[in-house]
Amino acid sequence: MLIIQKIINYALSFAVLLLSLYLIEGACFRLVEPYAKWRLNFAWGEPDLAKLNPIFKSIPTDHSIDPPGKLNFYDGKKSAVEQEFEYAEKITSFNRPTRDRYYNYLLQEVNPLRNFEIIDLGMVNGLVVPGMRRAASPMDVEYGLARREGLPVPFSHALFIYLSPHSSRDHYESQFSRLEGPFSFLLNHGIACLLLAPKSSSEFLSELRYLKSQHPNFAEKIFLYAEGDAVSVASEAIEGESGLVTSFAVKNPTKEINNQTSTSVPWFLALWSQNTDNTETEQSLVDRVRANRDNPNIYYSKLSGLLFKYNQSEQIALSSDIVSYFLTCLEISEKIEHSTGQASTNTDSNEEAMTQIDDSDIIELNRSVAGAREGGESISQTEPTFECDVVREYRQLHAEDPEIANLSNRELVLTIGSSFEFMGEDVLAEIAEKDPLFYRFYLSLKEIHNTEN
Image (cartoon, rainbow, N blue to C red; front, side, top):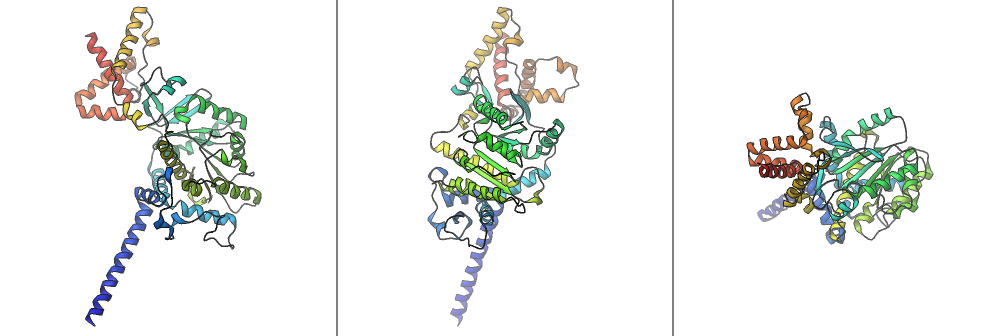
C-alpha cells in the first residue's frame, strides 16, 4: 500500500512538473520575443534550407498546421475567408511579442521623429531616414552615391512606403503626423519611411523606378502599404513589375485584387473587414494569398500570403499585423540572401568599417584643402561640408548663440571632437558608435591640424 502511494505521489509530482514546464514554455512563446523566433527556426529550420522539424509533425502546434486549401484541420462549415483568418492568426503567433512591443512603443513614445532626419531625394520628398551609414561599395560609386570606395554612405535595410490617395497638403500633413509613431518604430529597425500621395498609378510607378534605380541604398527592398482606393493605384503600378516591390500589404481594397501579380511580389498580406458586401473583392483576396503561398520553401508556403481580419479596436494608424509582418519579411529575406550569396551591400562588415579610419581619407582631405588654397578656389566649393548628426544636433542646441552660428562645420568638428577626447577615450568611442561619420571627420581633421602646426 505504501509503495502504491509513493508511485501515485511521484506520478502526481511528475505531472505537475510537466504542466509547469508547459505553462512556462507557453508564456515564453507568448511574451519573450527571442524565444518565439528561436522556436520558429527550430520548427522550420533556417530559411534557406527550411524543412519542418519531425518533432513538430506529430505535435499539434501552430507551426505544424497546413494552409487552407490543402487537407488540414479545417472543416466545411467555415467559409474560405474564415479559414484564412484563423490560419493567419495561428501561423503568425510567433509575432505576438513583437506586436506587444509595438503597442507599448506607440503608447510611450513622445515626439517620435525627433532623432531622425527628413530628406528630399530628387522627385521624392519627405523621406525619413534611420541615420545609418556604411562604407561605400563599388556599386555605390557607380551610382554616384560616393566619390570612391570606403567613404560614408547613408543607407537603410529597406524602405516602407505608405501610399495615400492624392489630396490636399493639409491632409498629407495630418496623415504624416498620424504615422510618426509607426514610422519611428520601423526606423529603429533600420527601415526608412515615406508617405506618398501620387496623382496616378503611372506617377507612382515613376517614383518607384526612380527610387529603385537612383537610390538603392534606401530602396533595395521596398515594403508597400495601401488601403481603400489607393490599393488600385498600387496594384496597377506594380503589375508585371517583377522585383520592384518586396512586400505588398493592403487594407480593405475597394476593387478586386489582380492575382497575376502574385509572382512579382514575394510577400503579400491583406486586412479585410468581413462585414463588407464586396464578395468579389473578398474572393480575389482569398485567391491571391493562396496563389502567393505556392512555393516549395516552407517559410514562403506558410507566410508569403496571409489574410487577416481587420481589428478595428486597434485604432492606430498602422496595424500591428502589418508592422510585425514587414519585420518578419525583412529578416527572412536577408537570411536567404546571405546564405545564397546574394546579400546586399548593406552588410555588417561595411557597417563595422565605418568606425575605422583609413590613411587615404586623410590624404584626400589634405589634397582637397591644399588644392583649394593653391588654385585660389573657395574652400566651401572643394572641401567636404562635414555635415553629420553630431554637428547638426550641436547647432540645434546652440541655435541662439551667434558665435556658434559663425563657426564652420569644419571648426565645429574639431572643437566638439577635442572636447569629447578631453572627457576620455570611452566618451569618444561612444560617440564613434553613435555617429561614425563625425568620428571619421574628426580623426581626419585632427591629423590635418597636427600636420599644419
